[in-house]
Image 1: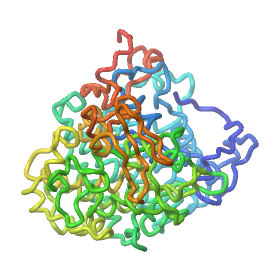
Image 2: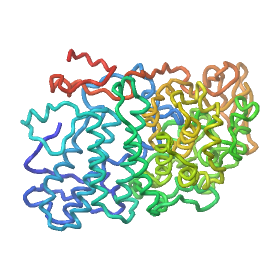
Image 3: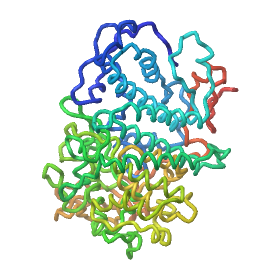
Image 4: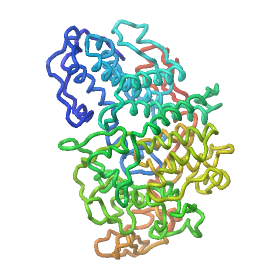
Length: 587
């Protein structure tokens, strides 16, 4: 819980603080007295640097719980719903960061530097909004605290959960305070008004669509209103779009791929990024290329959603279901080849991309974020918010409201298609022509209805393609009430059966599968069908990753996390449990 101490003792140098900016100073090692601290800009900066530890780490982004990209390490534990239990403690129910933010807001008045106060007060409000948005996504209703709490203040320590209305309004209010106080000028590693507007848009889109798609069901039985939240999301997104501060990165022949392999974040497009370099590294290269670090692989749910290069549906191609990997990658939206290793592709360092099934659990190897074939620690910056997401928020919010126009699409989503030379999305055509793939049993969405169904599905297609492995897919499926997609098979490319395959089109065999008689090819590890590799139709079919896992998604439980047992016990049941979670307590 939250506690108020007389002193902040030993405010340690936290490694992640250096990621708030590429050139931050260290926090003092000595004890700090609130009576003498918070008196100048330097002290405000040093204290607020710790708030940046709330920023997601790189593996929170690329190693997301998703039906579009999976691995052989973390995903099984995330997706096997039958094994999920209520924790005794932890599980995301942590409040230490909030205590530090509120402590700052209680003491920052000691500084007489008004410009410094504006910057760092705005920083505090932004991170408090960020903190509560994450709590809203995980737990729904949570207690709201605007001040630190004494250890003997049992009334505050045992507060019940505040309503979803109160929580989202608190988030919006803090975002508005941050927007008022933060500087207008953009800074990719620091905060500005656009960063706060982006958080406001993201939070309102989440809560608005969550309410809409969960209306009348377990998590919104009272049909909480959603329209105003989506209007607020669209307005906040539009303020960023019309500011002219950001535009899509379009340099070079493959700008989408280059954006995610740039050592320094591309400031034209990226609104907020996590900085890496020197000793600060992450493991995306290993995650995508090493059997011991994840063997990441994209899935058929993603690959099948890419349009043909002329804008038509891939599912309209004759025999699309049984196309070979080589054939299905031809003449597609260029982002497919900039996300997945396909024939003839090269890495940013000039080395050819090679196919090795050992290093991809699905057979669709990851190219996004990967700058070369080595497994060394990566120092590429990680975009956390970029203008592409803002375009998608704007389009989705207006489509869900029923107010989307063709002009709205042309100033948002269609700019993403322009970047890669894809035809524009036409509003009327989309609503009159629905891609069967987008509503199919294994890959599609079941809850979209109404006259805008077609364009909403197309916006979701675009969001899945544009933002894969950027850490938002799980919460997208939560807010759309599409958790059932986690129960569907994780398929890879189609295999005709036992034989030798040149997967990357370089003229050499790099994938061998056999039934009884072992097949050998130079430099190729053979896999026995039914044991070392599973195909969906026994001796042929799609590569089937995690085929032996019993996966379950409980529609009346798994959209929110459980409250830990110990925290419920301490409040004597004042802190209620989320629906569907049995924690063994009688209250």
